[in-house]
Image 1 (cartoon, rainbow, N blue to C red):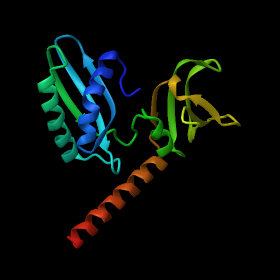
Image 2 (cartoon, rainbow, N blue to C red):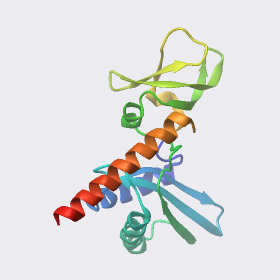
Image 3 (cartoon, rainbow, N blue to C red):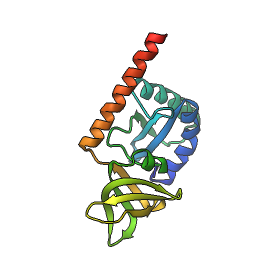
Length: 183
């Protein structure tokens, strides 16, 4: 889910270790566009706290550019775009479903389940390291969905998500101010 195509998967194999060595985790990678001008979109976050600010984007972009220039894995011209996953972020790793438990999400499957592929509900964690749990709208029981069936998942913008984002920013600012006072 972090990449959609075989080419995305090869780029992840190349770039994951580089990002990790720099202290980041790639949340999602997409190579988009035709043969002429392509765009390599990398969504990432700091491994230590899940944050990603403009300085982090620039730093990771420089590190990835060096490797991409040396390895030259993409034919033709492309533009590298490094960004934060954003507040209504994609959920691409099993750990994302744990981290954002209690928040509303939309998921799409690669097959029909109970006659449909798209579901919306509140994330209820992870079962047995291969299955996500979600409390679906209008359903009495928690649904268990194999992680391998999910092709797309993202958080839904809500007041609860906005509040959580604001609380996390306030904590980071407080932590930064405390660090500056001690230093």
